[in-house]
Length: 215
Length: 44
Image (spheres, rainbow over the protein chains, first blue to last red):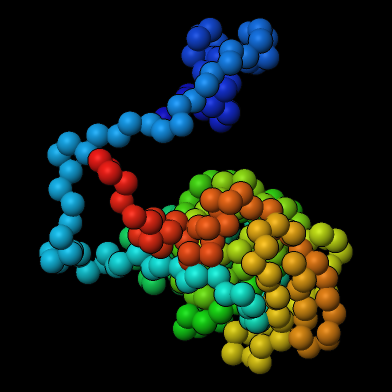
């Protein structure tokens, strides 16, 4: 509302500010207390009825099943679908707004808005049938919000990996949670060696991924 | 890991630093598939 003042801050700053009643730098409150978290948190299942697999999920016409990711292959060969610049936000990837909000539970429908802010003329990646592909981008890819649609829609369209100079933290976690490999250039200059290509073009970029967990 | 441009033959390296849990989730195809593949814990 008009006159409101909104601050975005870390949870630690929020906690410190809640204690003092004013915006507070937690570093001014002394030594951080040591807290030992339990190995496991108790969870109650009271009132929870496990599904028996026999029921039918009733959905409205504009509510579609959640698309699922695919297991990561040992080797992946896929075209670079899009090459983007720095600071691509989740709103760039999956825009909000009244025109597309109606599709918030309909990933196949919402995908048509994918990246229309950044690349309005590139429609191939948004309309192509699911296949496989890679997105290349610059710094802080996925900044701005935790919007999971910004991963679900590219994933639905076949994006299997994103190679960037750096990720926004939450978006990187979302990529992992939806089975999309988040890769960071060891040498950011390597980004300039790739150009996006229409999805229908012959595949030309390969990624060989060992199963080793790191590097 | 190594990334190869199969058109030009150019290669470069990229990193994907993962915790063991992140690695398992990624290999399963996401957290939904990962959760589904795990046996239910007693009492949960």
